[in-house]
Amino acid sequence: MNFIIKDKVALVTGANRGIGKAIVESFLQHGVKKVYLAVRDSKSTQALSQQYGDKVVTVVLDMSDAESIKKAALLAQDVEIVVNNAGILEIADPLAENVEAALQHELDINVFGLIRVAKAFAPILANKKSAAFVQLNSVASIKNFTPFTTYSASKAASYSVTQGLKDVFAPMGIQVLSVHPGPIKTDMGDKAGFDVADPVESVAEGIVSALAAGEFHLFPDTVAKQFQGAYQGFSDAIITA
Image 1 (tube, rainbow, N blue to C red):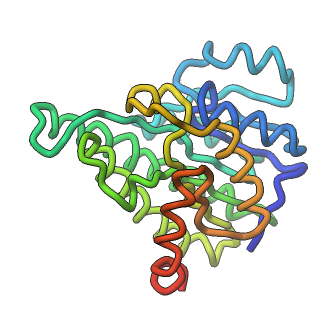
Image 2 (image 1 turned 45 degrees about the vertical axis):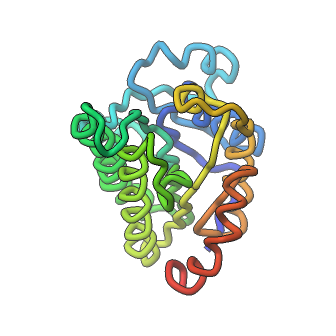
């Protein structure tokens, strides 16, 4: 399957800043008809609304609240592509004082949040002639980074769920893309302490190209591409075989 975003209707979680905002802007530049800005705080998208007018529609969506996700889905019945970008990062190694609380929080948003979004939007996407579901994972989903052990664990779980979604969505005609960025210049990247990071546009533009090519994995930036070089053989033989 491949998915061309031109003239489609999209929904992006965490659309108000960072990678999410870049995805919104890139999609609109490539001809997306409308983008639902799915955020916890409706005031956070005012600048995007002023810039793009009726091409964007803000909907309230809290990744930790299944009911808010269901309500957002009811408002976005015309959506053809969902980009689940929203996620959180806690700094916790395996013996950190906050390790259990950090992992619990990250699992709730990064894993259970993904499942909540997928369940809410699956019936909508399945009714479309062409549809796609994009999940923002991370290179941390395939390699643990010790200071961010709990984040790595949550992203490993979300990547595994994404593989499952690929299989259950395929008969419905829904293309799935798993995105694995490395260091990206965002608030989360700053929190992680990245000294060198690629721009958010590398992820946004990569998504457009990967969807058009019908790919399952996207390693969009400089560091991520190094992971791709080492991981590709395993992926071809095991993950996408």
